Structures are given as structure tokens and as C-alpha cells.
Length: 197
Image (cartoon, rainbow, N blue to C red; front, side):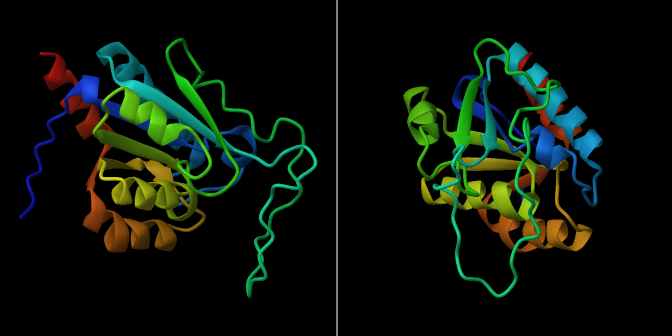
């Protein structure tokens, strides 16, 4: 059985919050509703800031002319509408606050084409606490890239959500269990408190 005790070293840990922005948070989520995910992520971010954990807030959006948007030929097109004004703005509950790093991405994953890996390595971060929306798109893509780069990962199950409970559960069962550890918000908060004690 895997060890359930979570030990964190705040100076070598980062919280990476995926796509908690106005346009995405406005959509329904399952199994956790989006306001609850935002509230849990905000609580994690506040505790991380207080404990010296590097906080990274990620949001996604195309350039104004949308010429950098991917347009693959697919069997099942995404049901997205053209983002309106403010769609890509981070929700105010999260910040950013002084010391946070904001990453703007243009694909699902937060590493591709951004300075995320550089910023983590320069701070000697070895462990990422990951949460956000959507579990099986932005969070999973970022997690797969982090795994390939050698980061240890903690996935905050109740601070993630997807468009369906089935998609969320599949990612946690089939992917996250093989590349990191799944914990609750309360378990992560408790580990941060122990690290400070």
C-alpha cells in the first residue's frame, strides 16, 4: 500500500492552479461544482503563500487575432464558443497576489511554450501541488508534462473538476495514480501546517 502521510518541504514546493478563470469557472463542473473548486484552490493558495510555497496561477487564451489557436481536424469538435471579453481573466478569489507567478498558456498544458519549467527550476522546486479545471484536459496535460520532466506531484482531488464525474474519475484512476499522489484539500493543508511546525 502507498504511504498516505504527506510530507512537504515548502521551499521546494509549488502550487500550480490551472485555468481558474472567469470563462471556464462559469461552466458547470462535476463531480465538484466550480465555486467549491475555486474556494478550495483559494484556501490552498493562501496557505501556500503563508508557508513560503511558490504559487503559480495559470490561465489560457488565444491571442486577440486567434491565429495562434490550434485547429486540428477531429472526429468530435469541442463545443466552445468564441471567448468574450474577460473570458481569460483569473477569478478574483485567487489573485494574483505579490510573489505569485502568472502563466498564460495557449494549449492545454501549462509547460508547452511558457516559462513554467524555468521558473520552477530556478527556485529549485521538486514537488508540484496541482489543481484546477478541467481535470482531464488542462490539469492532466500539465501533469503528464510535469511527470516527463521529473517533478513529484500531488493532485488535489476536491480542488479539481471536469465536465463529467466519469471523466474526472478516469483521470484520477488511470493517470494520476501512476504519476503522483491524490490527496484532499484538507490533507494538503494539514501537511503544510506540519511542515511549518
